[in-house]
Amino acid sequence: MYDSNSTNITGFVFGTTAILDELYASKEEGNVLGVWSSSHLGKDMLMCTVESIHKDHQENDMAIVIKEVTSKGRVLKSHLLHLKQIEKVHQFRKLRSDQI
Image 1 (tube, rainbow, N blue to C red):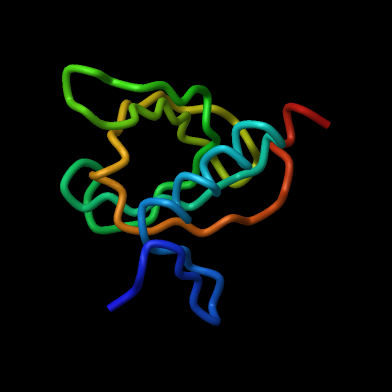
Image 2: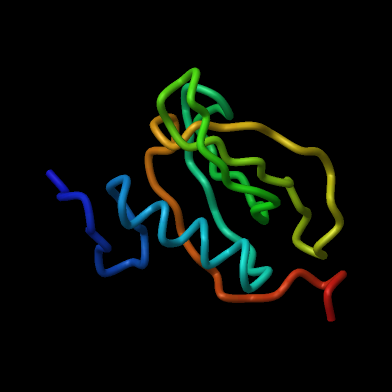
């Protein structure tokens, strides 16, 4: 089991604190992020960037608006997730091509 600040050797990030840190980094730096949320997005990783992060008082959780992107950086559609729905992330540390 992973604690709230875990990153394993393959670069996957687990735990709410570490995931939230990666989400903020993606938002601030414009990096592509791989997100897993089987309850909301299915079993596969979604390549995305983070558009916004805010407190959802009704859900008592953080609300994250992500934009799905293609491998070329084209934005496909937006999704609203809550932090508790995100199982793990992978930060690619690469800028979206539309920002270059």
